[in-house]
Length: 279
Image 1: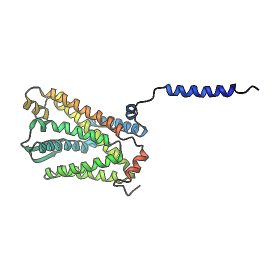
Image 2 (image 1 turned 60 degrees about the horizontal axis):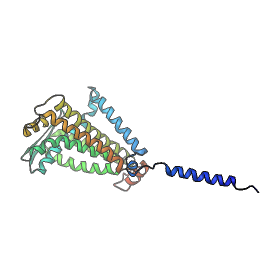
Image 3 (image 1 turned 120 degrees about the vertical axis):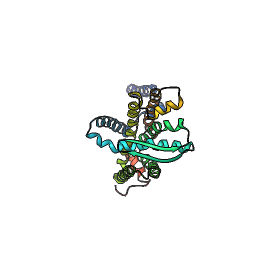
Image 4 (image 1 turned 30 degrees about the horizontal axis):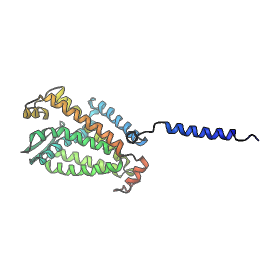
């Protein structure tokens, strides 16, 4: 009786397909870590939209006021970074001031100037990078906001006579609390992501504007060039710009590698860490 040719060919075909699948190159662990999932792709798209919107609003006179409080917040990061570097180098911090023209100043005595001067730009770009990385995850965004709260308290202490700092920090704290409480804090991570993107973009634009496009004698880079005496301010500005770009790129990579949970998993985890009472 003619029997098994068909069954034999089916088995051979199955083994052939299995062998072909096994022969195909499998993604390495590094490739798997660096490949964004759907939730991370959404985060990257939102961050890209933030970049475009910020760049557009920045140059439209009336609409640029929408960015005004976030520009001041970035200036606050800048001055706070000066103050932290001063503390780490045994300086005495007298005051932090923000002014309505998007400027700021940190008054200190002592410290190591070749550390405290670049700390403004590098520190605020580092803070922005950390916030971008945390913006990939809800729990990480909550932790970032708790750290920001500590920064805000120090800033209020050093800027206790500066009314603009009080208005800015109270307003930002109110937004953080609002987004924390709404819908399992999902909106909070996108708010943290926005602040991070805004901080990094402000640093990049400010470094280019103050040191590369035009030389401002009172800029941090000019003062640093005077202290070092080896390179003009444009060289230091370009060097700081490269570091800021590296912080931005590293933040994206860290966010993709470290936070692989999808949106549902993030909301579940957020429900166990200082959960919002509103769902």
